[in-house]
Length: 226
Image 1 (tube, one colour):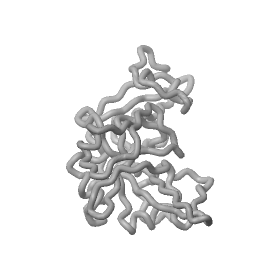
Image 2: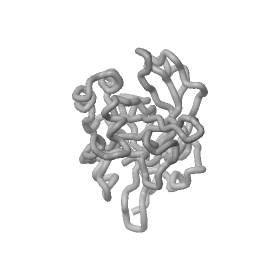
Image 3: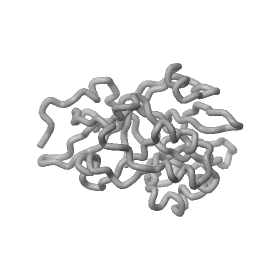
Image 4: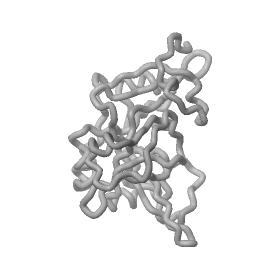
């Protein structure tokens, strides 16, 4: 799963992801939590568009009202059948959720130790996401997204050692297929990212508090718990 991550958008990232219509503002956050507005890339009228989406998908049928259940992650095992996600999948409403790294928690003696995980070959990468639009009774649209998750790789299973899940990170060459390919082409993109192309280290438990948002959160911890 993925419940916290780091993301920024700026002109360089706009160029890297070939965004034609750019984000309405810049962002640099070291502790993004569910329900936040997060940067994503969608395919609209033949162009890549940078937009902000609520992290935690609100399906079209919900009439703009977030449910009481968590929808910031969608398991690949059920994403095509679960009521909250299946319509977005069937309509091909796929997006790139922009990130530089993410956090997972390892159960150790004395509690949970947070880790920071990044991609050694992609300073900025994309989670595989789905988006949807839900319209409230007053007609106001709510745009939202979810991040797909996979069974954990050996590295991630050792870190996220309870649920043993990980977010679906896309390889650079899979961005176009995820955004514009057929359902089968997009599904083929959902592969575990190679462990040898990741970097990971324990970090301060300050990340547990969502209001803490600074560069020091991703500093390696000298003496991790446990």
